[in-house]
Length: 80
Image (cartoon, rainbow, N blue to C red):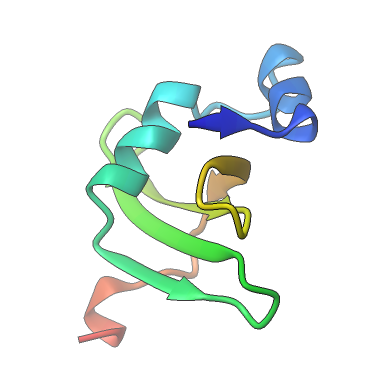
């Protein structure tokens, strides 16, 4: 996986408590994913260390993580 400069800057500056490894883990073990209108893919997964669900957005190349953040509005029971 690759990471966008924007995302790396957030991580380096401590503006995200989600690690690069956790972002990759969510993609590998997503409980839900959907493709946006622009072709980017959103993945959701639960991260124990964060204590909630995070959303990871991957560029159309399926290789570059654009961003990842906590998504308190995500409820897995609403997608089933």
